[in-house]
Length: 92
Image (cartoon, rainbow, N blue to C red):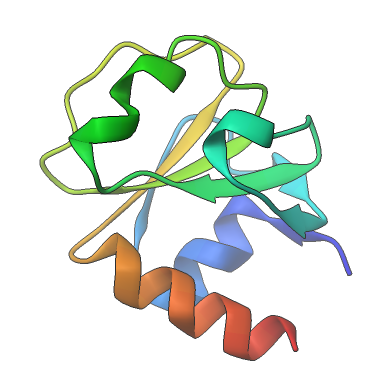
């Protein structure tokens, strides 16, 4: 299945920051992301991967304030953990 950032934001009540038409077809860890991946970032322990990620979309908190690749679209939400769980349930 392919989902756009706009579709994902609608499912989780998030806000797109970037290209709302960017699409993804799989979930991955931020350090293993590919261009068709969506990842989430909620733990500062993984901040070193942000500048190198190949993910097309990142789920982040509303307070997120890090440098990311220009091609990466953010979806801001209240709780990235809950949003990811909701998306995984919907995906399955």
